[in-house]
Image (cartoon, rainbow, N blue to C red; front, side):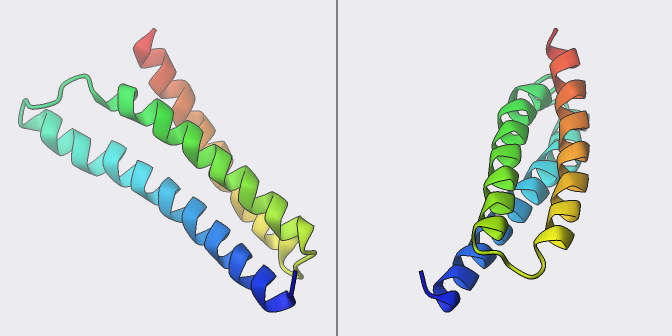
Amino acid sequence: MSEASAGGDIYNAFSSSIALSGARCLLTYVLLPLAGGLGALPTVGPYLGVPLGALALVFDVRAIRRFFQVRHRWRWAATLLYLAIMILVGGLLVVDISHLA
């Protein structure tokens, strides 16, 4: 794999995982509460949050692996960023699962 192609793959993996995590937070903490406040969706949040959170974690792990596969110079900084995001998303998953139980 060429260096330019590897860089593009890393950028795409990074963008996808960060975008998915951001979309999950936007949906869970902005859009659903607004809809719930209007009485439209009182209990849907955890049912959407769990699969979106799990998918976000999968994308995060894939992006970390990609950084290390191509031995990118920012792989350790990216890993720390991803781990922080994964801890936050993991906490949100625990909260969502507890609401389902």
